[in-house]
Length: 417
Ligand code: HGY
Ligand code: MN
Ligand code: MN
Image 1 (cartoon, protein in one colour):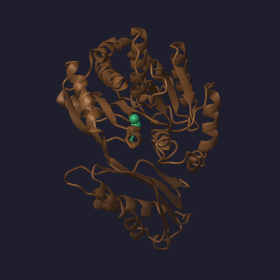
Image 2: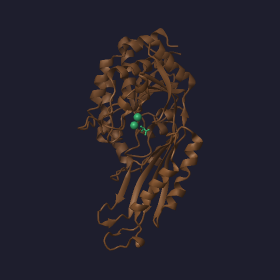
Image 3: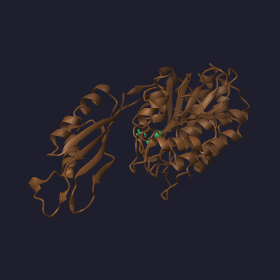
Image 4: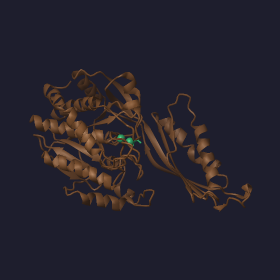
């Protein structure tokens, strides 16, 4: 149950201040269609990090970053050495991302710190807001990299040679990002009392239920793959079809065969081919190489494993004389959140007269890794038509502030227990 003090902080959350910070942050990587292209460890990401650091420094919060460039904004507690209560999300975006995916969780957390500061309210434990590095995994795979490294699931050195589609390696971009911020370095990892992340739902449920608050119970599992099909370039006019090793036709057959294998009348399976690169990409040359990605999601671990374990066999069975290389990039099990934290999110919403519902997250989040370290939960708010990973992504100031108020009450309660 949220204490009086927790509710007092929730009421100190300022809807307009939060909205203005979100709009200012959205200038970094702003696109003509009203979205953001602020990909991990890019100049735009560095500008967003500098913006957050300037805001935090102005309010007297301590700022630090670790070797993975996870960025920490810390408000001290009266028990200075106690493990912090942590919130946050990510500042990096999809190439055609929206203003709110990730940035909302970072800035809702920041709004909680500012509300506490302006209300002159101390908490027992420190509260930290984290901007986790490379959550999207769009420029550099795998995603949720910074939080996974923090949680010990990935090792940073294993990912320094990951390259983006222009062949730029992660290592130098990480070094440039670290160098760009003059803040103390801190070790990766560390004890956390609890973690609560605010995020737009990126789906249609809350809006359809006319609810402002979702208490997330589980993040569905995911497996990501890259598939490389290697055939032989040849002349489009002179080469008989039966002599071709056409990587494009083989890749298309693989994609469709997998679609048939993953057919699911309950529409629970999520199977996406998001990137599909054809080389050399000339109209009159038979493609010699195709590189494509598979993003597969499911809430049930056994189904996730059973279906995706078929990928390699199906790909090779449709190779059409080409070489096929299947590489699994990531494997994250369905992750349940802590019942006590879920209950506290709902109790905070109720104490603030906000009805709420429990729900599964179809999207991945940094919380799915931090959940292995400490009691973890998430607060969802609706976004228009549930659209996200799209420049038209939008949410209302009132819904965003409602989520920040529930976050405030939950964080303060956890920080004072
Ligand atoms: O892909 C995801 O689920 C997250 O939005 N990056
Ligand atoms: Mn996100
Ligand atoms: Mn996203």
